[in-house]
Length: 265
Length: 288
Image (cartoon, rainbow over all chains, first blue to last red; front, side):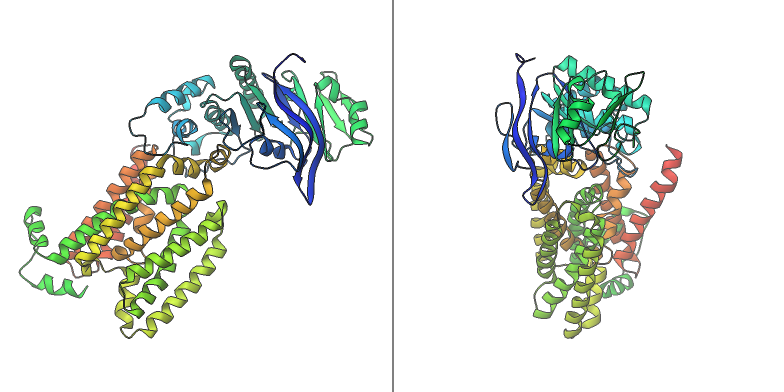
């Protein structure tokens, strides 16, 4: 593990706003190619971590580095899928156009004669198994289909880090599993590092290299086996926390605010 | 509108041959000017309208034209061309709405409150001016048949500037309109693009008011693009169709109004409305 290239490092990081600190003392490292789940209760500051990495928000103190530099807005090595918003039925724009913009949306001018972005977009759609959705309108796609399009939009510029904010929300179990397999496949074949915010850790367990657990203003990081135990969580949060496991290895965490993992929202 | 009644009673009358009709129409300088200004306005409105529809900003665009009403009235009161007052007030209004930030399109109550106040202010200005009814009427409903050559030139200059600006910001504006969160994370100046967009709407609105007036601005700035969006899924195609609808409606309106003693803006808005109804309820059934 230690020999792997560290892509994201955090030392004594404090996040939030001066009068409203969201979490503090976060120290962790994430290595190239890792599949990382960011979990924790609502409002614990999971998206805040993404905003810090994207350079959309500044840390209050501590050091956060991505690719050995402070995060800056517009880092082309990051592909971002925000928590979203489903397009309403009136948005009659074909998927391919959105994915193309992921490639060339930053360029000024009409780009009338550029076909490079079109080819890149088609390749990205193929990678996420959404070739057949290329000419469908965004407004009529289902939640699972849209997540594929968003993933293609993020992948089209060839990032080395993917930040996925709750891609699994609003998906039923079957689509959840399909999307996870897809993301995991992309992580492996492209050797990208993926951070995925989720509510329920259980569907993620087979794929995870690491967990970033954010709750009660604190952040715990490590492999699921290290972090998700009654002892480590109790020690970290200073309250009695119990990690329950059922016969299939599913986890339930009891004692931290909401009973996260007990039931998907 | 008064010009119309005299021209219809003159030797000009509708014939089956459209070439003869157009020859008749273009004998009149005021009709030439109307066609020229109408064409420029239709092209610009058709394009800007697409972004208005995509950004769900039709209420903001509608509000801008009403804010422009008080500007036009103030200009009339101090004796300058209404279009300067329109430009000034709509631009200021546009900057104000852009400053509300990303969710400006949903700030209906704030925008509506300012809109109502500005309309009230316009009523005051108009009443202070002696030619009350006629001026108010032409600002509210357009007076394209009274357009001068210098107005046409000004419209052309504004139109060219808008088109150049749009061709520069086209892709970033499209991206920010469709997917603001990702565009922002990619380091794009989304607030700046929002300001540019509102200024584009402000200028386009100011000139479109000449054609259809403050109250009917929707028919050129929103409906053609909304109709086009039902027909195509690629932005460029939608924009081309949107421009085509706005152009055809404007030309048709001017053509009919030359022979019939009713306001041009009525015929333009009706043409746009018929297009919309046809596409919305008939075309989509025939071709799913």
